[in-house]
Image 1: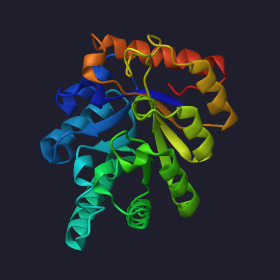
Image 2: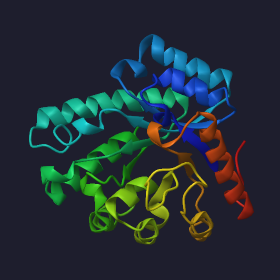
Image 3: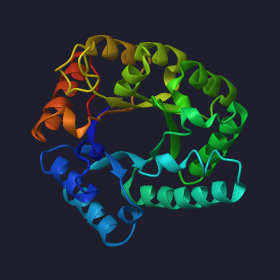
Amino acid sequence: MDIGVSTACLYPLETEKSLFEIASRGIKNAELFINSVDEAEGKIFEEIKSIIKSYDMNITSFHPFSSPMETLFLFGDYKRREDYLLDIYKRYFEKMGEIGADIFVLHGAILSSKVPDDRYLERYLRLYRTAKQFGITVVQENVCYCKSKSIEFLTKMSRELGDEVRFVIDLKQARRSGVDPFLLFNALGNKVIHLHVSDGNKECDCLPVGEGDFDFDRLMKHLQSLSYNGALVVELYRNNYEGYDELVHSANRLSRFASAYNFQISP
């Protein structure tokens, strides 16, 4: 099991600087959240690759800033826009190959867009199959302001797309959606291959690990029952923690929880 931290935690610090702050504190696994097109090309991308190499890092996953575009481009009714975004994502898939990342996080269409389910499934499947040509898996994330907020919709995706769909569960997004994450685990089973982890309580839905009342023992038991071998990635908002060392503490606490249930933790 890979336990790491998302560069999104440090936003709006620039992505390469965020990655350095994580790496220099001994975190070996990271999700790379890029925040502009030029971060996946040219000098900035070369700097990102240099940090990865220098600190012997493992990039578990890749999350594009272009998520807000997906409603209009990927799931809209104008094919040129669909093709255009797909071409952008193909370039991302190529860059992911250069840094060893094989999971691509998708938010999808926003709830208010009223994208028909059939269109959504068809477009997701096209993206999923395109990504597979590059050795990449597109994972649908549960997001409180997207169609993926609904456990019923995610269950429909799982049922109708069969083996050509995978998921990432984000604990804070489940809280914001009023959805019990364990119901998501039950509904989606071993198609969940990635986790965005945070703690929370009644006062705050996003806290460092160990500072809320989320039942991590129950989570580990559940993951154990699924023979889960994906990553656990700490993903917090910048206003939900004080200093960068708290990200390390969260990752270390996760490692202790996982080790107690005999998960093999990668270095």
